[in-house]
Length: 134
Ligand code: SF4
Ligand code: SF4
Image (cartoon, rainbow, N blue to C red; front, side, top):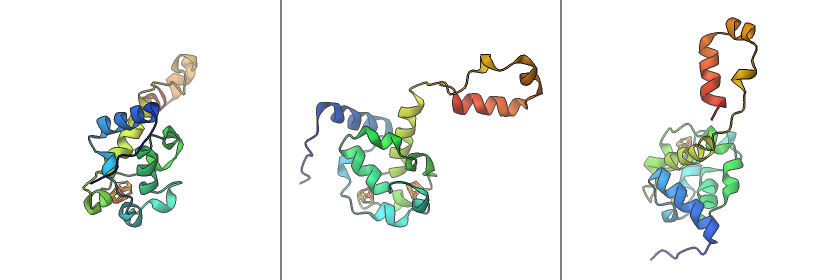
């Protein structure tokens, strides 16, 4: 039987949000480290996939500050190897979604002079709007 981890209501809310968005049951993770051991991008990450899972289990929102969630390439290596059948890539995707849904604009399109907009490649403008506006 899996022992329930005691966390604060606020942390539980965050955990439930990630459960809901990812469709995974994150508390099932047993911290075996198999996902971290097989991840081809772990050397580029600031925390390992299993550490990411642990922070989410504990409802620690600081997990959103780690670049690992953006480095994950959704290659599914961890997903096929996880003994608990957890799709870790979906968890990373859920964390990215939480950030993207904050709808923060990192660039102000209206502040770009019309002359510059006329010169800029349209594909670059569209790409910038997708990535840097909420
Ligand atoms: S492989 Fe699965 S059970 Fe093991 S640490 Fe990663 S997510 Fe948790
Ligand atoms: S899906 Fe992401 S976390 Fe899992 S092995 Fe691939 S890059 Fe690593």
